[in-house]
Image (cartoon, rainbow, N blue to C red; front, side, top):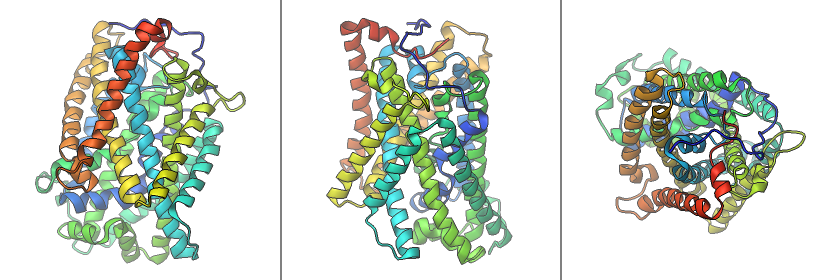
Length: 482
């Protein structure tokens, strides 16, 4: 059923249009956390899967997500809404599916953001103890990080963009120096073998795709800022294409450089031995101890940048759903001076603080539980949302072509739906590997089950709204659509 293009009187936006393509790219790429991926994601991928061809998988996924972006960008030219996935799925697949997607998005982005506090708290506390002799519990550092993110989330969006721009520049420079150092001092020579098909055919390839896909999380967030950017019809598509290219090429290059630094035949063994410390060990071997120490410091800032980026995404989902009456209306309030969705921001802060306190009281390992469980759950939910969004793009443009080329409105989103659906299934089948759990562990179905439950509750709530609050039901997914 087609959704009429209406804008309710309550559909106020999130302030003046302050940001352009560079600022949005900062938010998107910061969420993928380049140094965090290099230090944590890549060594873990090599160690767990045994796949030497990880660099090639990044290239394959970059192509797949570029195809997805063709349809996603076409949708952004027709719909401007801080709810992004929620709004697109509503207009393509209907209001009930849209609310179900919104609940999945809330679970996914919140768990991704909150899970990062586990790694941030542990990494920062470990760095302070090793380098400054300051011994703090991980949760005190995490709570301090929550406080700083809360202050920045309350302020203007362009201030956040400037902070992320500085942190992102430092990250990219650090990883680039690391990469070039591996190529300049290759123990076994520079080999292109990890970029070949043979290298990607050995090991747990399905799990390797899952790990690589997690590195792209956040690339789709450009549309969340459609109500705060200049010329959204062009800005969103350009920013998303640039972000996908940057993430895909840069991570493929870094993964390849890592295999060169250790020797392609040694990468799996070194990753299993050193784990997240592999980047710092290679940095010390090929660059020097000072650079290795600086890289550890910049890992902390990398995590902080990702926390801030995901926080902003969650705040805008709360704002969008509050504005349309799906969640309590106070969430739709924006700050008079800063234009930020400050109530949604404060809500996300409160959730993060509560979860960190619960895990601190439980005494569980912040990396193996809070970080591992929550970020993998968030990644799984976002892959599902990408798949549903691709299907929604096809359904939306079947009803009205709106002048879009067949590639953008039909062929690309259909291909993306099939490809991303396959990645989602592979993720489910390999979820035990992602969690480091035994086959048959209750975690392998309990955590994915949360996504299913969230979606079902969202659909059920939409049907409730249709009968009990029809005016609210009519506003679902509208935002500032035009």
